[in-house]
Structure formats: C-alpha cells, structure tokens
Image 1 (cartoon, rainbow, N blue to C red):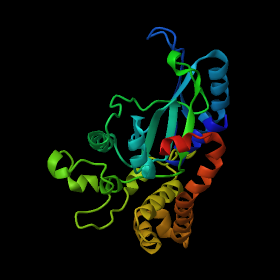
Image 2: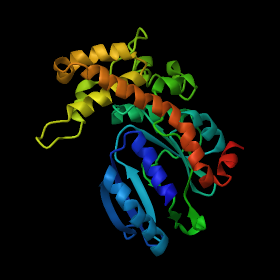
Image 3: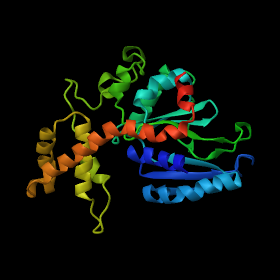
Image 4: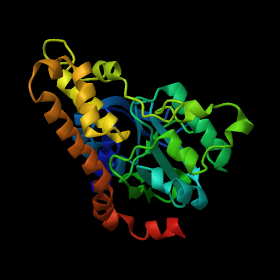
Length: 300
C-alpha cells in the first residue's frame, strides 16, 4: 500500500490532477477483460487506492492507472543504458515486471499534446528499444502484475524524484535529441521553447494558469491559485524574485490593488520551488526500504 500511495504522490507532485483507473482480468479474452473503468480526481484517487490495491491482491485483477494530462512522457521497455541516460531527468522509474522498466518524464505543466509528441518522437530516435506504442497507462506500484508469464510480480518504484520537471533544452543538452540539423523536424527555437531566440527567459502563460485554476463557489477561477502557479513556473524558469514580483503586478488584478500581495505570493512560490529542488533526496531515502536491491540492479 505504501508503494501505491507513494507513486500517486509522485504524479501529484508534477501536476497530475486526474487519473483513469482500470481493473482487468488478464486471463480473459481481449474485450472481456475490463472489470472496472473510472476517472478519479486527486483526492478521490488517494481515497480509492487502498480498495483498488486490495481488490488487485484478492481477486487477481490487475490495477492500471493512466494520468490524464498532456505534459508527461512515458518511456516503456527501457534497457539499463536508457535508464542511466534518463535518470537525472525522471520523476519516476518503475519496474512493472522482472527486468521491465518504465521511465516517466514531466515536461513543464503548460506543455500541450503536440509539443509533447514532438519531444517524445525525438527521444525515440535516440533511445533504442523503447516501446513506441505505450499508451500512457501503467500497472501500478504496490499491485500484482497478474499476466500469466509475470510470476505474480509486485510492481515497484525503483526511483522517485518529487516535483522533478524537465525542459526540452535539458534533454537536448544531454544528447537525448537527434541532431536538429539532420532531422529537420524540430527547430532549435521549439526545443528551447522556454526561451526567446536571443536566449532570454520567457514568461509563463498567465492566462493559461488562470484558465486551469480551480473554480470557486461563485463560478470564477481562483486567482490566488493561478498567481501561485504562475510564480512557481516563473521562478522555476530562472526569473529572479524581484522580476517575478514586478511582472505579477502587471498581470494580476489582485497584485495591483492589494499591498504586499505580490511579495507574499512570490515568497510562498519561492519556498515551493526550493522545496521541490531539495525534496528528491529525502523522498529517495523514504523509498529505500521498498527497493530491495532493485536500485543496484538498475545501476549495474
């Protein structure tokens, strides 16, 4: 159960707000396997995981969850060489059956599906053996993989890094994209889509943060949550706190009319960014009892 909840928290830490859960009986013919299909929000999935895992162990129904979002990349059937190359950028590495690994990357939260697919295509050109047909669904850590040839393997987290987002520029600098002059499919500007051509930092999309903010009881978006999200993104891209505070006063109505609002919001966002940068090592330590030697196997 600890593994299952830890994995949920990993996905929540990179902005996932909804999951599609499937229970299936692997031994049945295709089309007759699914015994449950349901969407869960963040709080719902945390409440439901215990019963789903218990059902998995009791009734031999595999538990599969798919994060519903456009900014995550699932890399399935990774070999050890690919894992080592991707490790610094992954928020989660999972062993779904003995020797079979998935690596998950979180692009900036505002990444759309087309941008995500371009980046994933570039990774496929460099990383050999990756399953290009992976659907974005995963047999969940803490559950039993009930496929006939998997020997009742208990899916496990090999490594977790809470809140680890990666930019296309980082992947490109690490040699994980094919040479752009050769492929011609992704321009240098699109790969470094958080920067302008001159190398200057780019502000996050404030209107998108506002659109994606929770809706309050009066039917309007929660501007405070939107402002928090925007500041976290801006600080994460390298803008200084002073610059973010000044820009927020231009964009946010609340920042313009309320004294100290911008400063307090930026201070809070800075604490979140700092916590995300430092929490990975703490989380890795918490997972150590769950690894049971798998970490060393991956690093071999």
